[in-house]
Length: 575
Image (cartoon, rainbow, N blue to C red; front, side):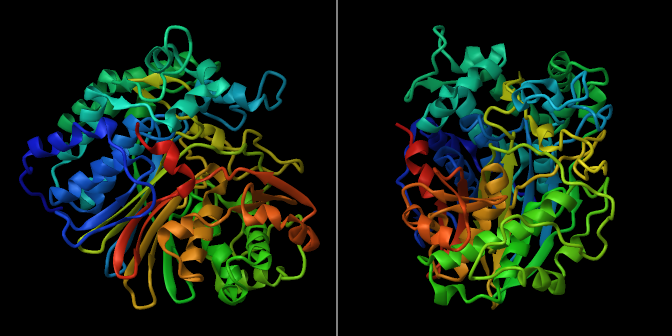
């Protein structure tokens, strides 16, 4: 790792003093040749995006920018991500070298397959599991950030924390995104007393849009981690606070201990890579299911001429939905933490296997319900689980002057996570990403069952892409739980097949197959084409708002552009 003296932070803090109330124009941001930095950053909140850009201005690289952005999101997007959760980090250099780091949360060492079952051996309502210490995994984002910085960072560690500390200490403005999350009826009931005292007024109503709030406890925690490194979180009083908070809310023996917290490690994993129309696409392997699912979806569609069919053709998106069904059938059966179960990644991504699965898909009709295939190396005795839908999460991306791309997805799972709070940040409910039933209907074990120190399966799909000439062109990912691989693959198709800008690719209408149901995004041409989809065999049509939130940095017409999903632009603007 190369270090350099810290650029004076005073100038940065003068900029950051405005971050608590700055607004950014909707749409794509283009890196200008006259900018004082080279590169770009995308984030779900413009204040966090500016934190990353501040690192580029100081001479930092994409890793520095991504870490600073993640830390700032802890402050300004506390309902979705932060240091109380975990994430996946994918780095792709100009010469095509890929590294993937796993900061996924872990179950306590004392956890076991029946962890979530009630006294009668039944699976309780999801909300009961979520609002409990049972749902909390040991947070991984700080350990992940440290590992990434040690291997790839350029600026001093302490510099990366200054924007987030300033936002937490000096205050930031509540935007519609935070207000809407606070207005959810379940948020107040789930939130711990510290969370209620911070984000709700005395009469129980949320802090209004435009209110400025501070978080001194979080500022102190961030400052300590900046000064002392990750031991300030994983050892000592802050680690004790995490373990104590979780244990007090866990209605079981063998709850989280300080040894669970101090023993956490981020891991380097093998990336998953594939080709789509000459583009090289790389993402995260297990315990993420996202990288495999994205590559399978694209691989199954490559034999169809989507460009000729067109972006506004129901047949195009019918084929996309069918590829989802097939990929997700494999995902549900095989994908889990590869430290605990055999995951047949090589078999799932074998071109011949993908081609055989693609043959199931027809342009003339729907498969309906799909069963998993049998890739090489697949375990024989596994059952599908009962993982509930995922919801939260935030995606960020950065590129620097060298062309190095970082795609980083960070999460605390549901909105406000478990609702438990320690050290000024919300703790995740990531363990509900496990199957709460340890065995399937046929009595076979579920790959994604709870086990001590195991990492739950994730849908997060941070992805980096090079064009057919080997040039880095796109770092992309999404939020939205199980919709993430679909959202990511859809935007990649828009970028590669239809030649859209990153912003327009993210804005494509959304559809997703849920079993034999098909969701069409409300208010788009997809809704108006519902009868065309029924004629193609999709009997169960749902018309809904798109439950997605995506982001990307990508090259378009020779320039790097930073984009976030157009659906969230008005919600993240700051009054």
